[in-house]
Image 1 (cartoon, one colour):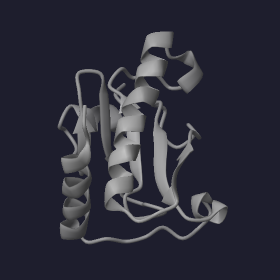
Image 2 (spheres, rainbow, N blue to C red):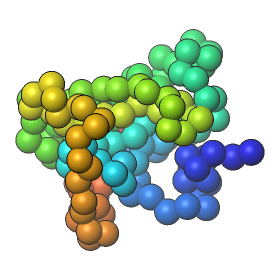
Image 3 (spheres, rainbow, N blue to C red):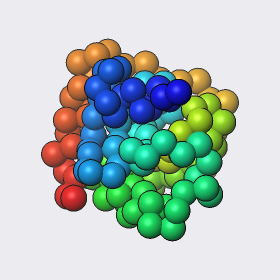
Length: 132
């Protein structure tokens, strides 16, 4: 059965796409901890990150790095924090979260809310900075 992330990749569910290549896909988290909070996934549906084959695992991280660099150009922050929890959706994903202090990456924090137009603007600005 397809996960919600596979349905996003296949265009069955809309998203705020940031970047895509033949193997990986990045889109804004719709319940973000920070402006620019992005999810990066392999298109290959694998539940647990450490079950990925080595090429997909390393490729996912290299793709995430390119997206993180783009986020930093758009969102003022000290760093891009990364998190891999893997419990919310059974499809490997890396959270890229702009942070200024360690507590900014606490998933118990209240989530931010943006309008559709704001999400589109954020995604477009980040997308323009991604160099694949």
